[in-house]
Length: 387
Image 1: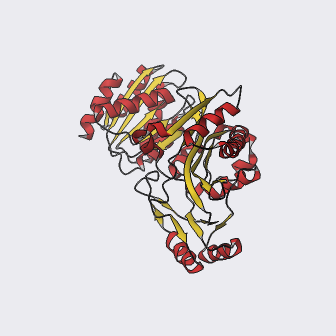
Image 2 (image 1 turned 90 degrees about the horizontal axis):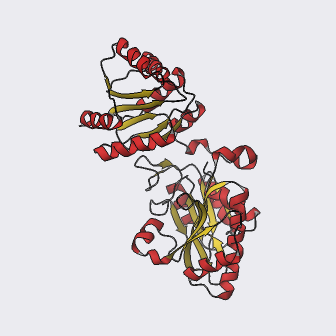
Image 3 (image 1 turned 90 degrees about the vertical axis):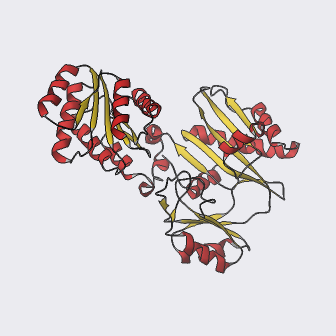
């Protein structure tokens, strides 16, 4: 689960992580009132959406007087903000964050996340803040520190010193930053976060460090332990199809391709997406129906993926282990009763009750279903149908 910048900064402030003063606004009038209350002569007017790259998309403006606060607030509030993380459809800006100014002398990048390859919690830091970290990694990898942490040991001084060295900090600056990272690491662990990112982390002319941005995502499976975090959920920022799928026990993530996938098991789903890419087509989604799929949940999966107007082919790849292939077949028939399926369906079923499933589909006389006996054959057939 993701939260907004203003929510993440409130959590930071409660746990002693330095942030600038700011207030959320839901109208232009409230934005101006917030700026007056915060005081000063410079304010940042920031769009609040669950996506990065807001500044490049026009969602962050620096106002030097109250008239500019009003103008920028009116411009950003209600706009559809498109960034590299929102996709071409963008996200509607429904709230703003008005933040006071600071005497910034340097911007850094700092993140704490779980590195699945190394099987360690990892701190990623760079002296090039306020930029796309992937671009920095590609063009200047020497400017990025990746410090692995054994969860049984936790964050220690030597971890912080390694980060400070890459960032080029002196002794006093290192002490301040290490104290800040220690608090962030503790927060990351206590709140069951997947990722904590600050871009940029700033150093002011007064020699202080502040989180000028804050992005936090949390492990959905651990939210039952954190009612305070679960209460911060903003469903308006979530993909409606993904949210609906979750209510039916389906794991669904929308992508930008044209081949819809319906698979059981995350590993097989990833392999299916890989072979679709390898064949020259593009997956339109990740969809894992899980081990307990019923005809009704399969029908709901069909309904969800067919709402995507980009879908030209559906590829069903099921290995019957926990979930029986005949259940999937009956789910396909159930779906065709309620939803018009006007695209070809490639079906590869193997495992428990695969023979029975094949008979069910053959007896249905559905004209747009094509069978495949292997994953490779299925991918090739999908590619031919996509063109």
